Amino acid sequence: MSKTRVVITGLGATTPLGGDVSSTWEGLLAGRSGARRLTDEWVQNLAVQIAAPAAVDPTEVIERVKARRLDRTAQLAVVAAREAWADSGLEDSGMDKERLGVAVASGIGGLHTTLSNYDALQQNPRRVSPLAIPMLMPNSSAAYVSLEFGAKAGVHTPVSACASGNEAIWLGLDQIRLGRADVIIAGGSEGAIMALPLAAFGMMQALSKRNDDPERASRPWDVDRDGFLLGEGAGVLILESYEHAKARGAKMYAELAGAGISADGHDIAQPDPTGSGARRAMERALSEGDLTPADIFHINAHATSTPQGDIAESLAIRQALGKDADHAVATAPKSMIGHLLGGAGAVESVATVLALHNRVSPPTINVDKLDDQIDLDVATEQRKLPEGDIAALNNSFGFGGHNAAIAFKSL
Image 1 (cartoon, rainbow, N blue to C red):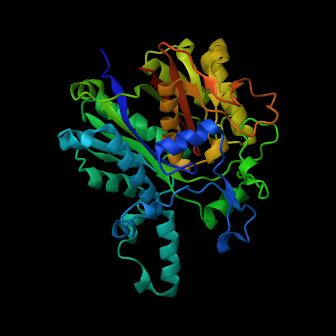
Image 2: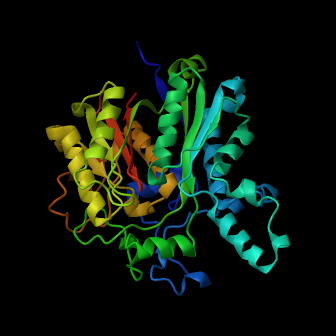
Image 3: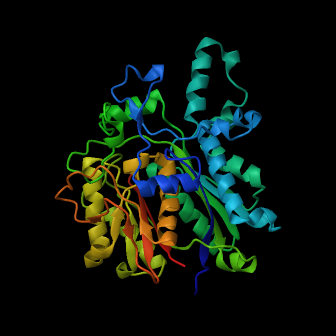
């Protein structure tokens, strides 16, 4: 049975490199870091004092009354969704909103709201906001995006740690192929640069402690990497059935060919060192997309800059692609934007789509000496991609052993 073709017709993002897609893409191509040392009073006693905050505060973009009703994670999601929706041209298409769905993920949810209302509770229970529950819910971002655009085909919120954004895109793909929607607003968002996550990730030895050199702290695949850099932001893609997009004359960036989901079954935080789970996710994405390893010319790696994770993923890519990994350019946006947790897969899917659309792989920065155990063609400067029919993979792996790989095809 033939599969329904799904294409990308709109892109939106707000990241540590810029408040929209164009500034983010420009920053990635330029190899610019969005990292900085935090100056907030609450950070002074923390071991880790660096992060990659959103370049544009979402409260500067969203109407003041609305912003006050949204947690920061949802604010970021709404900003990205508005850009993607405008980019798609669907606003004036007259589409049936009962055929419009939403799948927007978060790894943590409304943490700002949770912690600020807990502080208020300690002072006086009557100071707790009556909006606290709808603001702190993990599904808040997806819900408010659906309200923004009147989506009625279903609202979904994958919560799978750092694989969440990619799982939202996978879910959106399935909804369209199952005939439940013509269009899905899919993506992920996270706004968790606060004392508790920085302290907790720091105690796990998961974060880089290069406080005096934040722009060089995130260094995927480098022999001296010492952990990831916490970032924040959101990415949203408009997924649309090919027939629906063609009928309205929409522009199409790329085709969403397939997605692969697997679980390590290994450890709550550490990846399977053999890379077996990640390999299976990539193989399933290729199979579902009717692709072979020879079709892959660009890999947006999860590559967080942790010692074990980068090696496990490198092994997985080699296992999945074999000798064809030799002609696939590997790139790691987290070297510039940090790790956006539940927003990572979505923002990096936006970057992967643009890499195919523009036929160029962004560089990976801070790779001074490639780890001998990384057997990949790592791009440390912009790399042109070939003409013709090519494909790309975007990997996201999360605590709990979640693996999600997405395969895109050029158009």
